[in-house]
Image (cartoon, rainbow, N blue to C red):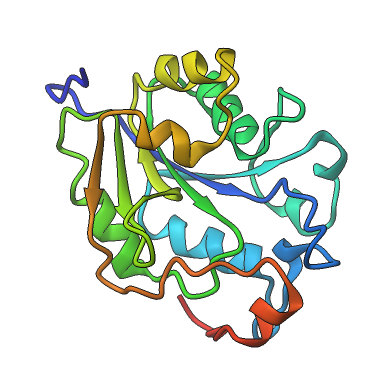
Length: 200
């Protein structure tokens, strides 16, 4: 149960620790009109939350683009995105975390703010229902203060897929105000079919 009597701060976490194997090059560094996809995501969240961090692996922390930003370096190996989420919760356990993947070229402020508008809930997770299959979108979601124990319990049981964690938890699901905002890019074909706007 989340205590809403004293609402915590909200920190943003841009997940940028992936290896981008299917894309063939670092998705965080995709160019969008002279700035990186990572810069776009950080700028977007900066206007919506109290503080923004970039989630990275240890071998990425000195990369030229990532070192411009405050970072949370993964403390866990072979956990995928959950490594970044748990690492952020370890560093700042008393805040709500707005977690966003760096590979969402069409995400916009409306999508982020609508999610934040619904954090006055007792549920530990707030996420969008996928516009494709109705399942939770875990990489644009709010992980409320106090939800770390739930995430860690699943991980100790071998469940490291963020979507499965939200499916099996008490998650508030919202309809997306912009149905295409959470379409991600994993391959060059995905990139060719996406619209990289120049502004959030």
